[in-house]
Amino acid sequence: MSNPSTAVIELAGAFAAGDPVSRLQALRAALSGRIVFTTSLGLEDQVITHLIAGAKLDIEIVTLDTGRMFPESYTLWRDTEAKYGVAIRPYYPRGATLERLVSEQGIDGFYNSLEARHACCEVRKVEPLTRALNGASAWVTGLRADASANRAGMEAVSYDGARDLVKFSPLFDWTRERIAAFAAEHDVPVSPLHARGFLSIGCAPCTRAIQPGEPERAGRWWWEQADAKECGLHVDADGRMIRARSAPQDTSETLHR
Image (cartoon, rainbow, N blue to C red):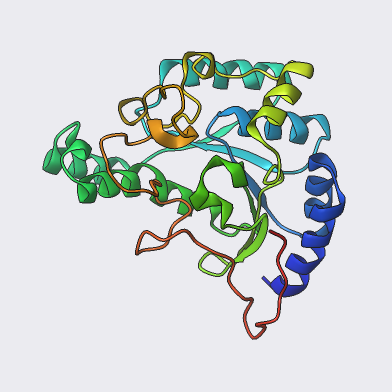
């Protein structure tokens, strides 16, 4: 990316001043090349798909199909494409790598240890994400600050130095309640799993409904004791959340939290 610092500063200003669709429009206007939105078909991502399709923005919509998704997610995928007239491009795990993983740890070996679970996420999610974002100038995500204490420390607009792109979360400062109200008002198709207590939806064997009073992401990898549980898409090699990185040769950029 030629001037990531300038782009991040400009987009941080647009984020602070705009609504989600104008934020996405500003992102598209500011950057050339591919912009990729990765959807998990969760509540936030369905609203972002609605905004992209409604504004007819040149932003690719992709999903990481791990092969272990809920049946309801595939139905929602089909219904979303039909409603908005868009094609959601899938990225799958590499066949030989997945075959080796399952042969070594078993079909549900991710339950056995944190290392095994991370290995599974690496094969099924992280590596496909790398391919999805290869050559992109920006990555649009559905991250929200109030989803977890861990995510509250991230930024709405940042430079991802490892991937050399702008990371942009247009609903970062919206609450789940506000997003749900918007979805209901605009007839955005959402997963029926949400009404059954699955607020954060990942792979079927790694997601359960939450109990009253539990935080939103308590149903993800519930058998683990770690306070900050992530699949690896937004963390570094040491398991820490990826924060904003200074652009090359520029350590003064200002990011919007």
